[in-house]
Image 1 (cartoon, rainbow over the protein chains, first blue to last red):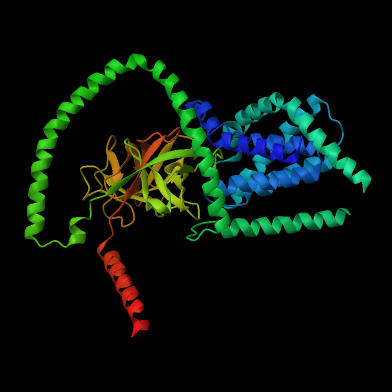
Image 2 (cartoon, rainbow over the protein chains, first blue to last red):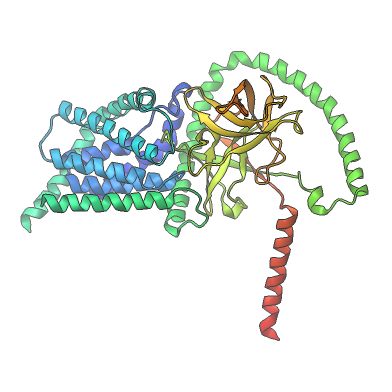
Length: 175
Length: 305
């Protein structure tokens, strides 16, 4: 599994976030469920392919989202996704985490990411919603949706990123 | 090692805060990487959004099959009323044109209300709950500029906030926020009471799903059930576009003016087709454009002499 194939798959997931996912979310829930499929992949990269890959992917796809859906600011997603991916990698890379452990890590880091994004918008006074309301209305429902997605792609994502990680490890051993 | 990492993290933090601060608010000239990325991604997105919407629409159609009979009945009544009104409208339009001719209206004054509606497909919607922008498949090549109003047949959707060569971004009215540093407020009035009623649509309340209209005068005749439309007094926005229906009215924060809650008329999720309203150039803009053309013409002649 080459790194560029993973890039292509993540790009497709990014496209689906803005198009197909919008139609799958029921009307009553739209604007409350946030699909963050690329971020789930960034976290798998952090867990199985190393923190630098995660940082790169996080900044790359975060920036893509910021530029494509440029409304208020550029840089919110690039910064938060890069940071979350890097910190996760720093703490847990190459630990061979089992499924339950990696899913709980993804869940916790997801909450961290949403809170950071909320905080930035709040600091720039672009939202006035109270945090507890946002937590119950958008963060918790999206938390479960993204966790289900993480579970669904666990096996292929782990295989791809482990292969990329071991390739990189082998190169480092040689040099 | 730990120090170096912390140092890089802080540099990154400062860099990103600088980017965010710089990109906040109105920017007329977007850089070429932004334009390139946007148009490329928009090109890919359009293959997905509409087919997905088509299939979703199929299931919706099956579900709402039962309501079609009722809807047909209502539409038939509406059509009869429409045919009647069309007669009256044609007569008034002729009369109006005759009077304009009599009163020596200038060309710009005559065409002031001839709005051009540019049809556009929606190609994607932002998944971010604090930034729910919508992307359209028309851009500066199709004559789109910033601040043009976007509507559906039901009512106001938002306004164009960023323009790229082949796509553009809409800020929907759900993003309106009186406290935010970069968002506009929309001047509004009441349908049928245009000369007496005036206020600003300023904030969208996500908890109730209603718009807040502020700075309404105390003696304003606005009341519950009125249809709120964009005002004629605004220079940027076209007038007469339906925004929504008044739900309640109360005394404002300082007791000097009133505020009202408004239920938006247009459905803002799962849009497929919208119209971008192009306002004809005003008299001053026409004059400026003419002057510019003349300047160019004389500038071109000058070196030849």
